[in-house]
Length: 98
Image 1 (cartoon, rainbow, N blue to C red):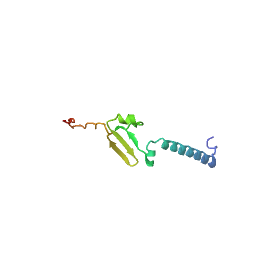
Image 2: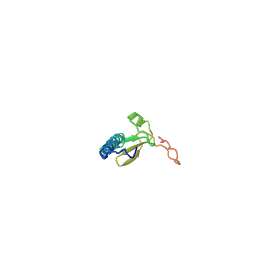
Image 3: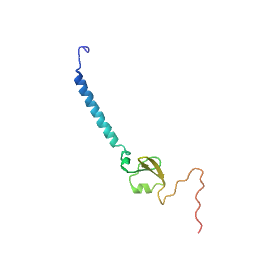
Image 4: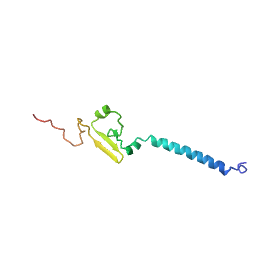
């Protein structure tokens, strides 16, 4: 029975075209959800050093260190007024004498 059934090439071609269009649409949606796509336009994404995206000034100000993600790479920064996180093996900072 299967041997007797013949699929028209045009029918298969239409199905493949429809599936390809759906795949293209899904790829566009997936790309639009990528937070790094807007970096090419000059925006910067701010994260904690471990990669959690920060969306407010208050959240960023509460962090001792941040990472700025640009189109061409990542830049670790320390916010003004924040103490840099101690590195392994560093001596604690001594206060100033008046």
